[in-house]
Image (cartoon, rainbow, N blue to C red):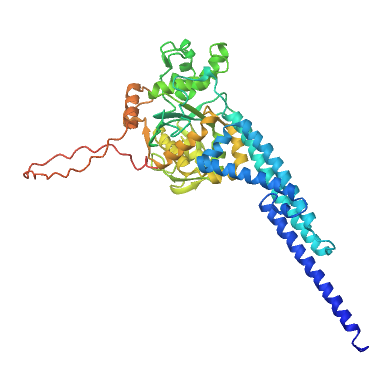
Length: 522
């Protein structure tokens, strides 16, 4: 080997060594990135390839066992029922929240430890920063998701405790509650469920609660067929329940004339005797007569439930009360309602807001444009309750259309995104006596209703129901007819039909069965 050629082999060996080292560092860097990402997707998986592999296998095993158990329950019960079964058990929800936090801490720790233990030695500064940045982002993703799940879990626990509590025995009227089966069809033991939905106009500028809208949803639990029964707010002489403490003030058994004080407080002597005022009348009576109602009972709820049962001739199984602001917020959380807006009964645009003073409409905030459109919560609320320039018959029809739209258009997936807001609305603005353990059954019932037909029962002058002098026997017969099961379809006969001889006699067409008017069609 000559002197001129001697240094060259040494330079080649050094270059090859550096290149090998760079390849080793690059491969180690890529391995660190891959295992860190793998540990983010599957808890502990990346850590199993490090010197802390025992800890990694423990975390991975816990994650896999949890996934298997959750998957089995979801496949067995369905995702909705599985979630609601958990929701119905607040103590289990709290335990789940703690488990999420603990698992999240272990998960984040395993990601960081994986990045540290797989990082190549003598890694250059740029790639060290890249690995650290990626690890930080992945940890924040896992920690944020875990925190959000734990937050939703704790919100749910608090909401279920406050909204779906156990109803006191004294607050239950005959027929209240449902018989939910624990296996198979949850409604196997209950042929029909009747839910009284009340919209209250409680507010800071009002004394007490007035039931501004009252609708009974009578549901056939097998088919989901539902009848929405609207009760006129201005019904007079409403029958009180047999055990009503208010019978002390109204010994005739009717809320209003000829008994006692309520008839003297309104214009014409009847203004405060309307059904809409019964709730606040009961509350005032309870204040003046301590001990008239059992401890723990809300007098207004008991009276309105008992009286509505007497009016419709059906046991009211469940009660739902939402105030006006809560209703508006819920519709906004749904993203609005698609409504076929109708004009007022006069054919003119329906006013937004307004009230009648001495025959003159004042305070109108605007008018609805007729036609199919999406209404936000504020407009949907006014469409349901507007009275200026319209009659109570058409107002009832609008209310039923709004309720029907809610049932048909609610999107559970969309509502999840608004969950904290909805939970706050539920706690502050809504009362219901539906039990937490019955929630899965009611979700199943709503799904049956959405797949079936919803009809309306209008208690109006068209049906010879007059609010100033109502025939309650007629009302009950109308409702009984409306909720009756449809007659089975007649199967066409295959037997030959002998033609009848023609006749020149003119026949009077059969009277058609009553159908809804275009206004009544939602």
